[in-house]
Length: 117
Image 1 (cartoon, rainbow, N blue to C red):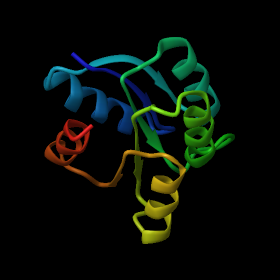
Image 2: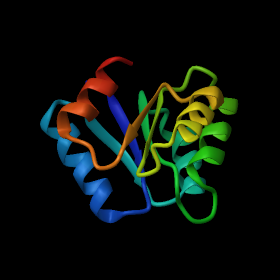
Image 3: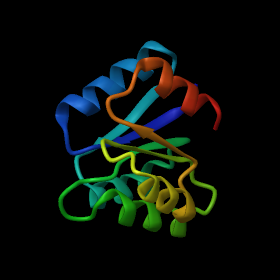
């Protein structure tokens, strides 16, 4: 069973991701509503996978991604965003993300992306 940290400023999105993943055998070990808390939880919990929203107040997802990858270069982070423009996807991959999902997404898209990790 893979341990997942979910980082998103939307309560609804965290709940949706949690339900999709728990229904399919993933263990949600933590949830954060901002990037700073997400980075702290990553360091403390050492999840197998992180789902990370791009746009959040305070430390945004891109900065959180950079901090997580600096702390653990092997981190498996999947970015999730409503902004699917190529530049965001490219920047996230260059910064160390292992995948990028555009909102809205289906349960199958989420599972397929995480399954490739």
